Length: 553
Image (cartoon, rainbow, N blue to C red; front, side, top):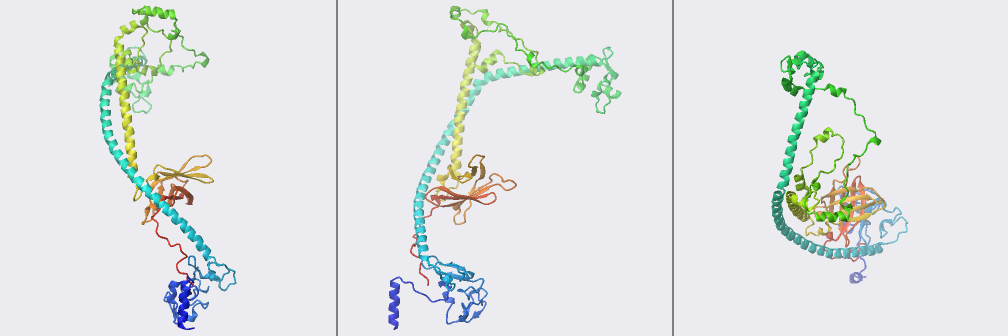
């Protein structure tokens, strides 16, 4: 056959798409073909030595890097190239050559083992192209959704910024209103406040007087107890009978110490004892207290309710005839102003005596805004009480207005704070992740329900009852340098038993839907979530879905 015939045959084969065989040693990729020239000595790819070409693939390892045996299992560190025409080329360890197991889809690794292998490259390539086609469609649709999300996010952010500006203006007006109402309220409450202060001051003075009287009574009792011979004087020897007064707490009150307590004298009378009592009353133990018998508890069955004399009937039980009589009586009767029936009460304890007494009638009216009136005559005679009631109602109205305005101000401040917090988040280069804010996504498993609330927290709750566990709160974007928005990091969750705080890494992938697809715990207390969202979909490029490039043979 002439050269012209050979050339025409080659052109015809190419035009028909027939694979063209490029001669090279078995197991050598096309990219390394230049290193294997059949008519030249072979130099090991690591440059360690040069050998005759006929020692390539002779089933004996000459090169340290195994490059002289790409098509045999002679070198333990060698690798075999699977051409896999119609699918993806790949490398396998040389040890798998002719081991009876088909590793290359084109069956080239089992050329001398007798294994019955079937070439599956075209079918694998077809399936891969279908997957790539589907992924390309998802990426395209996801990217279109992402563009919508970006548009909506930018519009929403602008609206929120305008809203915050308007609310800031309204907030200033509310603050002015609150301060004005505060002044009005304090003015209206002044009579009530002054009445309470007067009552409290009077009570403090009364308590001080009561304490003083009690102290004087105790002092007089102590003087009589100490004056053993009733001569009207307390002497050093008489004071020594009370060892609890010992200044140095050594258990003995010496004559010198007793004389010191008496002011340096041998004895004191009642008038001088007052200064002595000031120094000893905190330590002094009354003899009457030590001899006083323990109180006897009253059995529960003997406790009776206080007897009420002449208990008045409720107003609704008054007969109609009595109502008519009351209507005819326009004048005020003294009987209407009689004191209420008395109730027998037990003797007051010391705690009762220390308690502040009830407010006087006028102060109570200012506080409560009502008083007991039973007839028109009573109202006429109590004009002052009516005026106090009106003062109370005015103060209460200003209090209500102030509290309402203050509540509105707090709510507005909360709204402004929440919007500003949302605007401060990093929602991506074009705010594409904004729509995830304030949303939560769940993934039920056989045991737990996992819940992801982007930019907030991740949690885990037992499916059939039990408390929720915090798997981490929002930390930061933690993806690679070229795109940090591919990974979310949630940290400082609930602490593990004798371990670190729980944390969760969320990996984001492109998808038409927003959903948690999987969750796992690769390390103790460290969780991993897979999350699909259109926000990470990139603009699709033209993908070559034809069978893989050139078919190497």
